[in-house]
Length: 149
Image 1: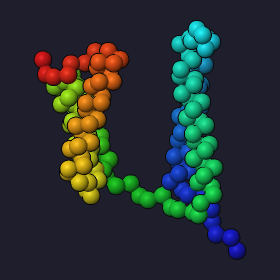
Image 2: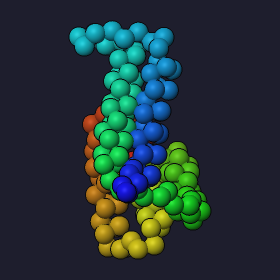
Image 3: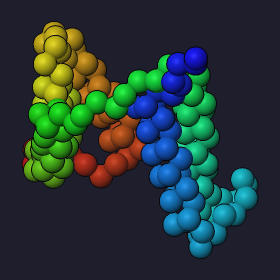
């Protein structure tokens, strides 16, 4: 008798990726595709959505090769911590600048995992904040203040 196959969490992830990709393709159906030389408004969204569908297919195929694993019940604390950290980022990005918002997002979000190590979290927060400031604020010119006004 064969054991059940299919890693439940990864199969759910694969379905979500493929579903969001398909939804994005449907929503972008009226946008001009353009060419690689002259990209239209729909070129990048379609490429990202196709990548999501492809990634979902790869994850799903790999999940089917593993033994069955159940999907665990939802835990409320990590969900609330992550939602709170994202909401705090949105508020601080407007009123406290990129540095405060980014530090809040990473440090507050780390509280979702009670096994986190503070030294690692603080080093990660500093490094990601500096990287984000260099790439997004300076490199790409995102209109966001680094510090509070």
